[in-house]
Image (cartoon, rainbow, N blue to C red; front, side):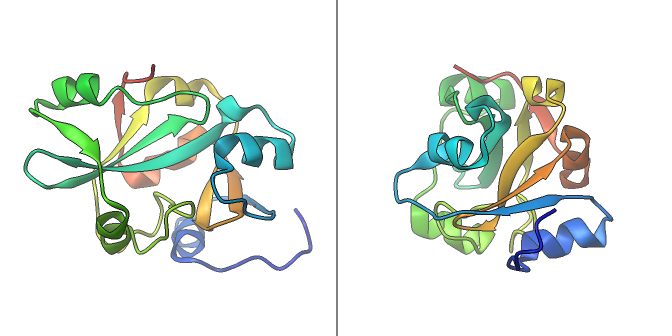
Length: 159
């Protein structure tokens, strides 16, 4: 673990509260750099970088999907699996209201509003994963089993 100071975000507070071991990594955030930039900065495969996507269903309820950085979400398949008519990405301002995080710095941990969390099933096959720590340019490495504190449901919606 680096001796460099890192932010104590609501995500870090939740990880600490649940005694989850994490490895913090800070790097220069690049607008539109996405998971490819994160993977390059940290020297890990993009498949291991997990993005936190805030979505909204047809009843205007929010939800979070955790997906591999090199994959996309089939919102059609997600809606079908959840018994919804339609699911789409939430507007940035709505996602911020629900999570308390800015776009590019969204973590599934420490959200202002408790949203249901869905995890792409293949994420559990990883030894470790890299996920946002609650600030742009701040990632933490944890194990997939650590996601259990989110009470997630498993889905198969990667394309």
